[in-house]
Image (cartoon, rainbow, N blue to C red; front, side, top):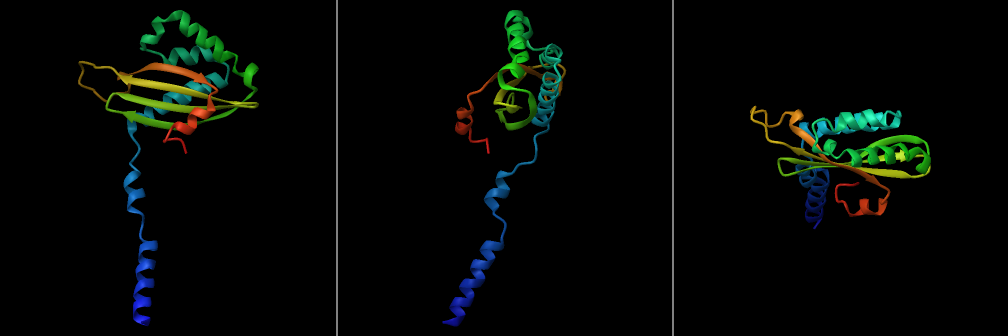
Length: 162
């Protein structure tokens, strides 16, 4: 009887001490493309926080088809410049989700923290085909969506947000 309990205790101890293979398998190494696009977004948000919103959009949207939508971009710049007035002084930002959808689409969300209320920025990058053979080159990725809102309740629907 004592042997059975000892064996059971040893087995339980082994199970508790072993690393959780499900968690280890779920943790993939960082995707260098997602990391590079995240760096572009961080530069953009830093520019917005410093008040250089127009230049930040021009840099972020370089090569993007969105630049052809002049009036829409101007309205977005103006709305972004009003963040301090509407939600309070800038306090910081942080990434809240990043994921690749297939091989050619990356979706990023960042929380832009203001004194009174946070704002969620959404970015979608699409890899455009190039004839130079550099299929993963970061300059092949174009912003196809950039927007922001204060619909914080939608973050609860995103399985990537922790």
